[in-house]
Image: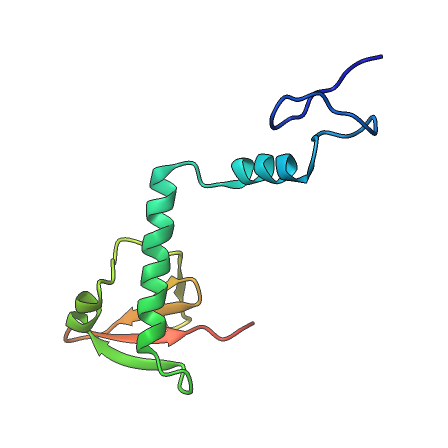
Length: 120
């Protein structure tokens, strides 16, 4: 009879033949390690994206879904223009830069149109 060991701690497993972990804590620990962002670069980028999203969300009135702000206002809040999730180009050729569901369109005179993308 073959003895199986826990995929997390290495202890001998007792019970069902298809069991992979000795208990729920080991299963949870194993999956947490497997699914964690192990790369410091990934963590940094995700933190910047979350901050950018929060900034855009805080500047757009919830009832309106869009507003205009100055470049200076975005810079004062700490918006990092180097990080985005995607872009969207309209039929008219205007390119919006998005951070998740919030985005901006550069306008003339250091102004920006901030928008919240409606659910499709």
